[in-house]
Amino acid sequence: MRAGMRMKWKSDWSRRLENSAAQQVGKARAVYAATFGAPEQPGRKWAWAARLAGWALDTKIHGIGDGAEWIERQLREIFGKDAEYLIDYYHLLEYLAAAAALIAPGKQKNWMRTQKSRLKKGQHKKVVAALKKEIEPETRPDEEAPVRRAWRYMTNRPNAFNYHKALEKELPIGSGMIESSHGHILQSRMKQNGMAGTIENAEPMVQLRVLRANDQWQLYWNSRTAA
Image (cartoon, rainbow, N blue to C red):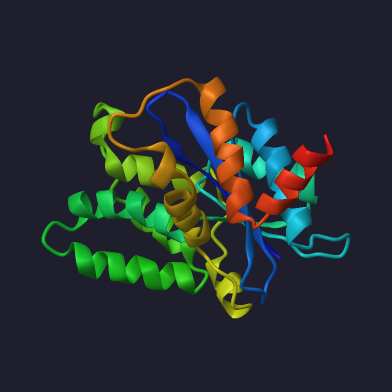
């Protein structure tokens, strides 16, 4: 089973909506979950989505996230130490692209092509080494040091770049499933022009949108009728 969670949408209400999904390998159907709140709350939603998607004791979990420490921590707590965890490949490329503009001006595409090849061959340490050689002086502010930021991002997560292993197993290396759900499930309703509100009012709407996306609408109405 593959499972993904990433902190994605900065809402108009100045807090973040945590969006997650789970999908059994070989199955077209994905199960979605979302909530506002502290890390343990999205973690419980992630577990719920995984169970609905078919998570069992012997299920191998392939998780993808954007690098936030709490995401991997929740993955380990919920799915156990044997769960695999990857940094979203395309999220990492954003860091590298920013660094490329400084390292190889005018030749960014060639530099990026080399790093992409290394990453997909399991040579992420070579990418780290290439960044380290070009790190900006310590006197330069962090916001003006894209190479340093990319280098630090990778060195702080040394075991989360095994893209070659995922590709060998025909598993995803990016969180496209999350990005897709974020758009058609949530933003299409929650982020329209002129909309504003509170977390308390938004949370019920989020849960209704998730129920609809997971084809649980009738189940919801049945429970309301029974109540």
